[in-house]
Image (spheres, rainbow, N blue to C red):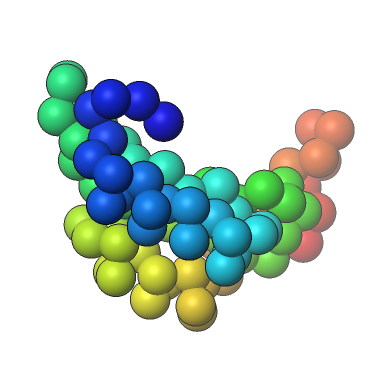
Length: 82
C-alpha cells in the first residue's frame, strides 16, 4: 500500500485479505484517485470469477461472501477445461 490509501482503507484491506485468504483485495485507481474495491481470485482453477468488483468495501465483501461462478471453462495449456 502507499500514501494515497487512507489508514481506514488500509485497515479494511488488511481485514478483507485476512478474512478471505483465497483472494487478494486491493483498491483500484483512476489516475491518482482511489476508485473501486477489487478482489483477485488467487486460485486460477477456481470455479469462481477471477475478479470481483465493488464501489465500497461492504459491496465487495457481499460478493466475496457469495462469489459468482466463472463463466465458461478454464483455459489451461491451450485447452478449455469444462
